[in-house]
Length: 310
Ligand SMILES: *[C@@H]1O[C@H](CO)[C@@H](O)[C@H](O)[C@H]1NC(C)=O
Ligand SMILES: *[C@@H]1O[C@H](CO)[C@@H](O)[C@H](O)[C@H]1NC(C)=O
Ligand SMILES: *[C@@H]1O[C@H](CO)[C@@H](O)[C@H](O)[C@H]1NC(C)=O
Image (cartoon, rainbow, N blue to C red; front, side, top):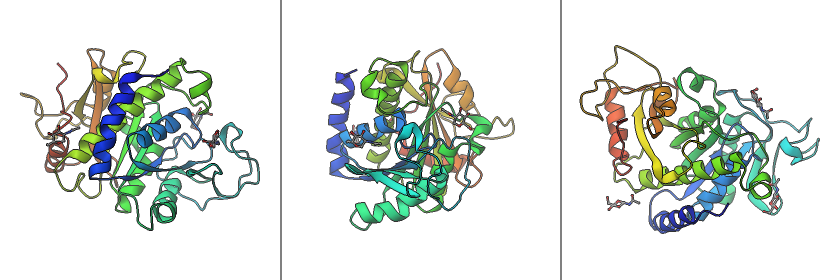
């Protein structure tokens, strides 16, 4: 489906991206390099004017958290038969070397993108930022501990590259070829909606005057609600949330009269609106940071703006 609003938004953003701020991005995930969702995200980021290297697992590596291994020669085909058995541990699309697979875990793909591919493809320098996802399926609450999407973002942050993990309730683990063969499929629409939202979130963060954009060692965990219920990117609002429920925590106050942030599951599953949850988590513990660190991120996200659930 051709979406004129998305195309316009992408065009407006391309000037900003070109003008200043982060420009060189690594894109990773845990569902694999050839899924519709990561390819739609790649295309949307490129259309918005960013330089993007996709570096993601050769096969589905959901639920692998921060596991790591030395990537190995393929003893099965890449997902959706995108490379044959016996292919090297790392490989790329011959017609677009910015599309890369790594036959390891998500954290390995992120690290390879940052340490090896960026130096080769970004004129010798590392990336400015790592985008992980959007994951197919939510990563809220305790699931951040096992999520490879969060694992890839955490790995980047530990290597000094700021990163965000994005996940969405809708979509399915289908090939990127379905984006063109099934333009009206729910998985295609989800991929486009979430890709547009991610571009918008990043452009706002990168336009912020806060420095650094994210405190060191801190990543964001962003979750999108059902795109079947909320197909229009313009209808989404962004709500700062907690990763884990904690009655003793004192959070930064974003909304009048609430001492604690809502839980991210509560935000993203609410049917009172199209609410995306934004949780500020530590790359080490993959759960909530303290109030002062939350407050620094609120400052960076002033342009969104963050919203309340009413
Ligand atoms: C990907 O891996 C996850 C975790 O093992 C599994 O739940 C899911 O069904 C897999 N997806 C596909 C398409 O095989
Ligand atoms: C490689 O890129 C070409 C050109 O963009 C595309 O037609 C093809 O489907 C891609 N294959 C994979 C596995 O990415
Ligand atoms: C970028 O920031 C400037 C100054 O704060 C603001 O006027 C402008 O609307 C922002 N643009 C976007 C796309 O957020």
